Length: 335
Image (cartoon, rainbow, N blue to C red):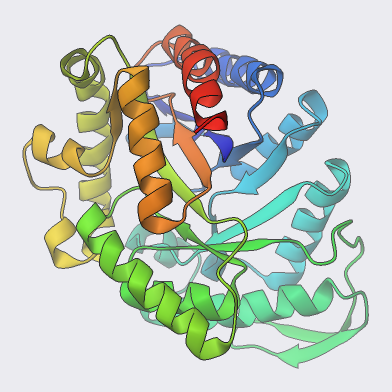
């Protein structure tokens, strides 16, 4: 079982983002020393009420200070980009990390982002697919000529090629059509942190059926993102993490995140109900059992864990990482 530290880099408007970024870098250095396998970074634009550093420059700095860790774009909003630009930026990251990039891609769901980049949610799926196809073609090294709906490549070549051939591609998806797309186009479905386990049961069956129909094997690495918080009891974990997660999920609801999910998985519910099937909370023994249950239930073996929540002090995230490494990782290694 592998673990990535998810650092979304979301800071309140009243926080010192320079200091916050330095705390994130300290977490990265410690994650490498503790035996984490990767760092994952999300992407959003116009992220109010949060301040949020952008994904690619952050991961480039991670490559410099923690060279053992893999870099996960978790996820890049692929419909918003031009393929040649992103192909060269991601290839640069792969070179800078000596071949440790995992390209996590998603469609997105926020109108403010689509409008800012001159597109719409209706155009998102076709733009996603043509961008991914063009990026993969550019990464082969040869000249690429193709006409997209929003770009023209005329004998274009990528100025820098990735070290990995190919770069692993994970596709994040909340909706059923996205899960089918992940089966068809990706090396793995990047299982989201938001859907309930009941929904994921149904969607994993859908994913497996799609893979079988395509003649593709189940992925060797199946990633899942989850929020994690350890405490002497589940009740204490719930109490300590509640303000931060409530604020975060209020923002997601205001952004329209749950409108992109199956209807029963909406966020308009009390916190205990919201937390029940989404977050890994409790003692180290309880969280270990939850992780093992997810592996058995879904075949997940790459957990992208969020321990640094907006509003909680950075030292709390450091304590969470230390406890995971000291108490959860060894238990999983022998399970």
